[in-house]
Length: 149
Image (spheres, rainbow, N blue to C red):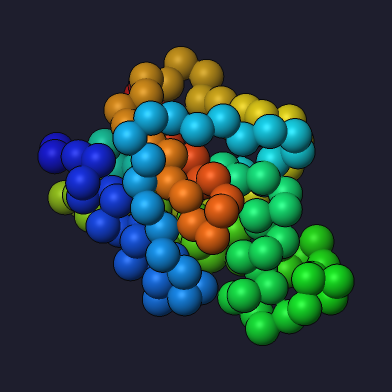
């Protein structure tokens, strides 16, 4: 398994550019998401057990949903937000999966909201955690190695 911040940064940059038309830049130091947050997560099973998540503020998720679906900010629904965060997570997670597992399956995305941190993997070990900035909004990408049950 080979997973580097540079590889993940390339994936995040390509997904944000192609899906949203935005530049996403990896920050050298971790940023902190304040207030309510939205997280998307996908699991990798098979050759390696892992969990990949994207976490962002509620405002960022609404902005990204509007861009993805061509909607004005006041027209973005909760379903639009969940769909866009799920799709971004699926795109980033699927590309990361190809770096960490020769075989295996990617789960359907799950989207949750709440206070930061929105998502924790019980018994998981963080393999990589990077923060990105896109259009003034922080995005936290985390990859956990899950213990086999």
